[in-house]
Length: 73
Image 1 (cartoon, rainbow, N blue to C red):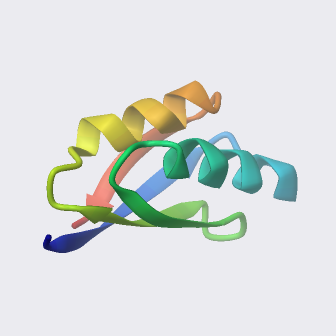
Image 2: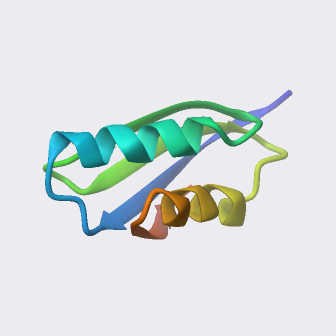
Image 3: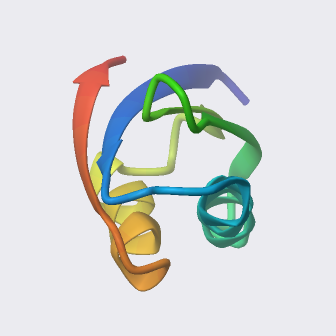
């Protein structure tokens, strides 16, 4: 199965626990292979199977309590 990378700007994070929470929620989405969130840049980079939609990943960010905007694919 093909993979792709999503880059998402995350608003509202203020500590390391925030970035860990985002990663945990994003990685719970079926088909997400990895998620790495950088607190300083406010950006999450997720590697996903091609079947995963941007909306699924953004919904996980919202579930974590933040807002996100896909800025790169």
